[in-house]
Amino acid sequence: MGSTSLKIAEIRSQFFMELEKVCYAKDVEALKIRYLGKKSPLRGLMQELKECKEEERPQFGKMINDLKEEIFHHLDHVLQRLLFSEENSKVSQEKIDITLPGRKRFLGHMHPVTLMLKKATDILIHMGFSVQLGPDVDSDYYNFEALNFPFDHPAREMQDTFYLNTETLLRTHTSNVQVRTMEKYKPPIRVIAPGRCFRNETISSRSHILFHQLEGFYIDKEVSFADLFATMEEFWSRLFEKKVKTRFRPSYFPFVEPGLEVDVHCTSCNGGGCKLCKYSGWLEVCGAGMIHPEVLQAGGIDPEIYSGYAWGMGIERQIMLLYGIDDIRKFTENDIRLLSQFY
Ligand code: DAH
Image (cartoon, rainbow, N blue to C red; front, side, top):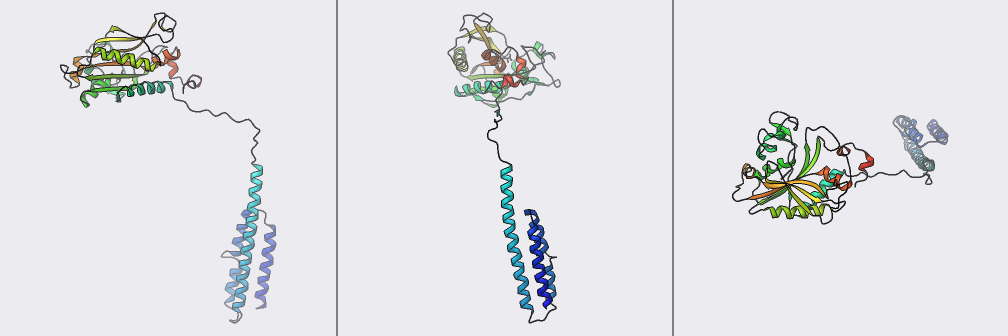
């Protein structure tokens, strides 16, 4: 059995020779497999033990196990040392040069249309209105017919409206929310409807096929013109962040009677006359009126008992007025130089 102890000594010295050559942590694993794995020479010796004398077996078994433990211990020791030095050299190589100038970070911004919609909506929620959203793709009925548009009204022509088929269209205004809401709720109704609108227009600095509106309406017993005036003064003053004077001019919209156009004293010159208001002293801000009895009826509300007012404003127009932007196309051009000025 002298040969067994010789073999153990040989394996041992072979192991230490190889261990000395190991330079990287990943090689330690390979050595571990070679000396402690299933096909290691020590495993082979264990098999051979079966053939040696019974009284010698425990002694050689112990020698093999001691060597296994010794190998394990040294492998672990070398592994820790190599991992430590590899980590150190990695850290020193990746050292950050804090003297280099930093890269400027750009924060995302809200689109001015989103900001204006949010601002107007927040003000009106505080004034007691709740939000109802209508569909962008709607029926001719809610967009026109229920709103008292006669069949031959020019707005119903293909030139002005994107029809998807004879019955379905892209809504041309947020007024399409009115009758829908009346069908769903009983008065008092105090609702605003912000959203996208579409019109088959030639795109220019003043008109676009895609724009945004905010519609508002209030229906209850004894709602009068005085309520509309008061709401307009309050709302526009809050939106322009100063007390503004309002003016009402008669106008025509099929779904209101009487219909009117709301002007506010020019926010830039306070009525004195400037380029923004084309020297008139007034800015046209929205259409409004008392809801037509036919429209109330279409919504299942008795016009003998209830009355209401409504108004509708263009969002892009308000931003253009407030910030002196002269071209509506700028809202869809995504020029970061313009957009980054709004937050
Ligand atoms: N829907 C109209 C438009 O797009 C705006 C409007 C005018 C809405 C008068 C109203 C209103 O509610 O009363 O031009």
